[in-house]
Image (tube, rainbow, N blue to C red; front, side):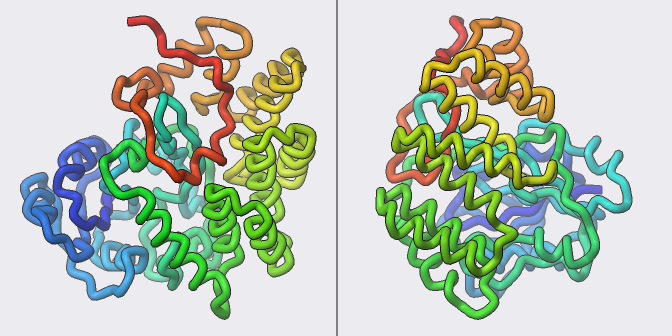
Length: 356
């Protein structure tokens, strides 16, 4: 029913744990090797993965090779440095015919036990016309799902954990490469405006605020429909720079503009609660967090924020039930810099791991 699909390069050390995390959900595992010089292919085969050939010129477009080769009805996309912590079969078993895909919550661990979270379309129906668009940076299938008449639903469970910033690798070089690719792609004819938003995050991480804001303005001028995500990114940025009034205004704007399928609503709620708390309006922050829980009860960070604000142990227990990685020693180590996820992070900072 589900095919787990991976594109990897020099990921031999990461693959066993990655593949183990999807075995419960996926009936088959496919791997596209993107020019590895280590034992990636051999390790993938030893873990039961089927190797798929690709002549794509970019890591992003190599993803279409596994879409061509898969036989399952549903595709689950996972990277070698990600882990799936929940069986996602119930999602597809209960999906109505109008659902073309699910946006799964991904926790981007940034060190010190902290993370940013976002929603990514990583679980979707396999169809001949659902392919990644031609981009060397942040290619996605959501536009193709929409063109095919499918709806992207927000998954009530099924979390991915992204370990990138916790791994021993050259993060500065990786971020520089991503900036180069986004800079080249964002102005091409037909390039989706969202690429400018992603480029803005890279610039924010470098503290080039003026250039980042110019990218968001250009994206909005190109397509006003992205205003909710642009407002969210600006809110997160202002919060990170301690400009709380502006952060609150933009977080409220993102929530007011966005429909219930806007994949950034959970982050907007978190920004709003955080700035209210930082302004000393604790009761407002509690009310905002309870509203976020009422809307998205399966998002662990909302419960964690409620615990941070109130000290209610039941809220922490619920957060740990939903996301047991919160107290993992693995994620308490320092993270890498620069990181786009630091500026996106909007969780309250009072939380400390539960005593052993």
